Amino acid sequence: MDPNSLFLPVVLHSDMVFYVHTGSGKLSWTEENELKTTDLRRGDVYRLKEGAVFFIQSNLETETERQKLRINAIFSDSNTDMHEPYSSIRDMVIGFDKKVLQAAFKVPEEEIEELLNQEKPSAIIHGISRSRKTSWEMETKILGSLMGSRTYNAFELNKKKGKGSARLFNLFKEGKDFENCNGWSTTVTGKKLSALKGTGIGLFMVNLTTGSMMGPHWNPMATEIAVVLQGRGMVHMACAGGGSNETGCMNTRFEVEEGDVFVVPRFHPMAQMAFNNETFVFMGFSDSERRNHPQYLAGQASVLRTLSEDVLAAAFNVENTTMERLLASQHDSVILGKGEPKTEVEHENEGDDVYAWEIIRLV
Image (cartoon, rainbow, N blue to C red; front, top):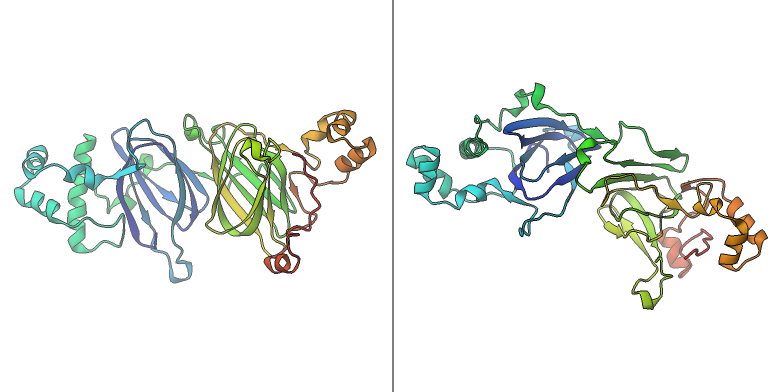
């Protein structure tokens, strides 16, 4: 959304969990026959429940801070047969004929005529002209009637605070789950944000410095859907079945950049790597609101370090001394800093040898 824009009211068909990537604005939504409002800032996380009506206004920033309001959202499965996650509040009303609308809202016929004769606007409008404002105020009255409560003026919500305001969880204001010189990571669970309870949705964010790696690991409880927020990197995903054609799953690696979305299924080992000339930042959603407890395969936090070296050596069919060196050499944990993926230019010059890392295949 450009500054001074309005995402017009919609009715949610399913729960919605979102993260504010850039910009600022104001969220307004219905809850228990009230219209509530809260400010949105970069890093905010919030949940809206199915059945809620909501709309968003982006702030009019100064010329030096003209950032678009960008929001990443996920919608939980709905029990309805609707294909879209939400419907326009306008579409919920316009489907009735004039006589029904006039009888329902007890307004003059000309006001209903004006409502029905207007062209359907885009989902996001840029500013509000005087002529449009009359139409939107009429729809706001209808929204109030649908809620069974007093009407609200959507264009004076900046004046409404107090109990209508709500505190959002902000990823940048909370402590990190893990942080070292190679980067940081954090998660948002139902324990951190009670509003997530019952959604089956969690959130996470990873910030990798240049040339660093989120160590090879797997998620025992959740599938991850990630969105690249900044930079470029490589994602390496392995298969728990060894990547054979018999399992229908193949080991794979792919480059991602800002705006790309990638999915890593539950139990699939993965590693995310920043190029050696830029950072790599991504956030995303998981299909579990509980703490996931990723299982790392390398480094000081490796799950392999909890197992007997004799048993591991037998599992990999190597000497005990080889396994001992393998487990002892990496002194970092979780986010590793030794070695980098090659840049795109280096990759072109060196053929298929993409990584400076020396990674032993564990699956």
